[in-house]
Amino acid sequence: MPLGVRIFLVYFLFVGLAGWFVLSTVMDEIRPGVRQSTEETLVDTANLLAEILRDDLRAGRLQQGAWPRLLESYGERRPQARIWGVSKQAVNHRIYVTDAAGIVLLDSSGLAVGQDYSRWNDVYLTLRGQYGARSTREDPADEDSSVMYVAAPITDGQRIIGVVSVAKPNKSLQPYVERSQRRLAWLGAGLIGLGLLIGGLLSWWLSGSLRKLTRYAQAVSQGQRAELPALRGGELNQLAEAVQKMRTELEGKAYVERYVHTLTHELKSPLAAIRGAAELLEGELPAEQRRRFVANIAGEGARLQQLIERLLNLAQVEQRQGLEERVAVELHGLAEELLAAQAARVEAAGLRVENAIPPGLCALGERFLLRQALANLLDNALDFVPPGGLLRFAAQASGERLELTLFNQGEAIPDYALARLTERFYSLPRPASGRKSTGLGLNFVREVVLLHGGELQVGNVAGGVQARLVLPRA
Image (cartoon, rainbow, N blue to C red; front, side, top):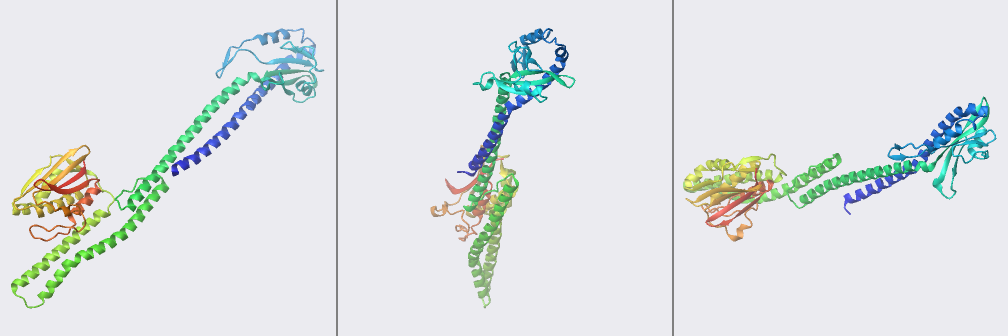
């Protein structure tokens, strides 16, 4: 199972369980919370009525006065109120008053007048100076039929002369409880969903960063050129830099070993020629032979210098993982610049030169490297084009890429050599001298093109040989 999926599952389990626990706990607390709030209101109402009813109860005119009619009118009121989206069409308080013996003197419902309520907790406890309250079901089998009763003492000085009780059916509170639970359920589900979305995005980002780092490590292990992925986040960025440092150190060791072996092998031939010529020069030789051996030493020395310079250039390119700049490089002017630098060779061989690159066509890349690559390509072509032959630069654009070609009217490349032309130190004999070059020119061109994300092809075409470079277009 991918790491990102495992992280998300753990996060999902944690957030889901935590959200469910918090939501269920809060949902369970809504009902008692609403009832506690209602009870507190009932306490205030009962104590207010106790003060209002005291004088009439003490004078004995509670039942003969206006109170029965007032309570009856109260029960018939239709508020037509809308409270937080819940419609209230009737009053729900029941009010009854008992004397000091617990006998009901007044009842807003008109059902209990004359009955003995002294055993009910609200009346019983209040008559004894305690807080009187009870909750009683109207239907013993129905939990939602319970009614809250809260009582307050009616006093005459220090003596309790009666009790007023205010009742509220819990069923009237149920719409508010359900509304709160629905809103909380939606909000809770939304928060849990948002949390899971954030967790999913976090897992996707983390697994994506790890995938980039994994692909980079795999490319490195396969010897491919790869740029260090840009990762956000302190630890991930540090890990990427550590992998890059490890790669650099490991590649550096292997790179040095490989080049030492290669350079040693390539230096044997010119050094042997120089040593042989030097030994011969120690003896008495005719002037003509001495000049020939001295020329051999100079030629082999120049070959050594060229080999070392090109090897250093190639090493610099091979060690780079990316371009230092990406600018528009105008190819027509660059080709003119390179042809001007080789004007002496072109004129000496009587070559025909064409620059068919459209003016204004630009490649996207590092100008210094592209110039070096094209210079190596042109130098290689000049070695093989016959006197009076044709050299032609051409280019065409296609979408985000462009194709640059260099044609030379030389002999066809042997089939056995086509697949090895860009190998390091592989070279074909030059037609003019019969000698081989360093074999690093086309390899250098290939490395530069790959560094630009392009490709290099060298092959036979009608009338000669063509090198084809595919590069990003500016």
